[in-house]
Image (tube, rainbow, N blue to C red; front, top):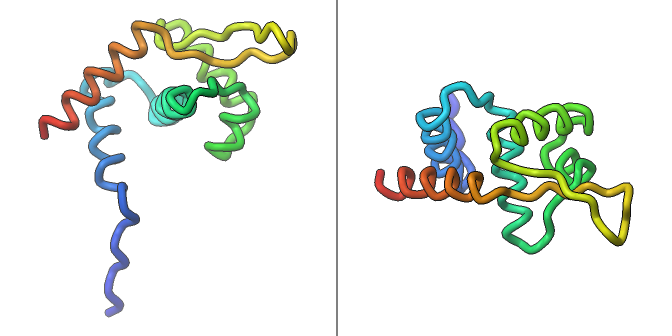
Length: 112
């Protein structure tokens, strides 16, 4: 029987994050959680993402991104804003409520 390959580095950390997300909000679907975390990660690098960037980074359609971002907006975790330099662009920003949610996730993950 062939040996199982080890999980890529960081996989267990991601699993813990997803488990804690589920504990904090059991109604948040996995795709929505992944999109939220991607928005937060890209924003932390100084560039709030738009729909195209999110779709490319996650590997799903822009329409799927748009539907999930709308749900995240309704939950108060993110908001779309117009880019003054490009009126067609609407980068997605994490709200103060979204950052508080991230802090709770981080606290739970680092505690375990």
